[in-house]
Image (cartoon, rainbow, N blue to C red; front, side):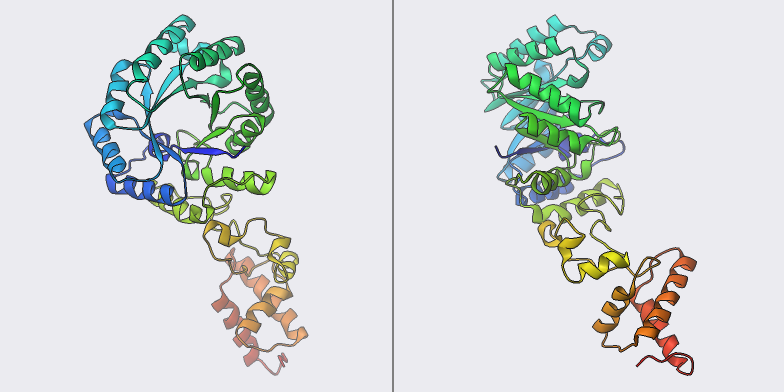
Length: 380
């Protein structure tokens, strides 16, 4: 079973505190998602108003290849707004945990009754209807199973299991999805993981391995609080950790990641998995000596597979002679073994003083300075 990705950057991603996308930015994100082969996007929340409906219709009218989905609360008015927006499908979200239902003044009887009514109301308007089990990770299991089976019986195409506060771990995720799969074998199940405890990617993989066929993600994991499962991380983890390749064109990940980071004004950690600035960088001398011979020795992800060029080795405190010789060879500069050790020591001193890696230009400056002291150092 190949994973089916549903990107919600334009909906849940924009719900991240302080994030606002302009229409041109939404169009650019949509175009990049389309180029990456994303089959479906949750495009927005039409009930937010006329501007949101206009933006959704504008993107739809551009003729991209993905299916579009509107997010709605469990009300007929929200669904009417989704119809105005013109999306292929509608997603209707229900609270299913005791804590959420109590806070919203609802109960299990209301959830089941309202779901039946709204599915019947929506089916004539859309190509498909999906149901959201909000806070499924804290719901009573017996009610959750009844809720999902009822959604299936009344014509829902898919049910979303939302780990709304990010409380799941990979083991509990696997058990949750597996338990549901045993009673509902044919309905499409979607996992929507939040990253409050740093496990959204792992939980999404665990859900897929347990039988959830649809994966809800955002670019860079953008989303409320600590965010969602990042599409680029989930896809690469599936491919490289489990051997399961998606239909996504992963070569577009770096451009997508950089652009969403820019327009959301959310600077990525340099060490962010897959698309962080230094995620494919190396400094350690032990590593670079092997990497020069074979990049696969200490690097799992090829730069080309995510639309990047291989990074130059960093020159710093942990560098070894192989890195120094690599750069000097590139510059056609000769050096003896003894002088290389002296130069390496100077590099380490410089990096410690600056508290950073040094540049290639700074390395060459150090080389030149040592060259000028020929009475002390012999370079050739």
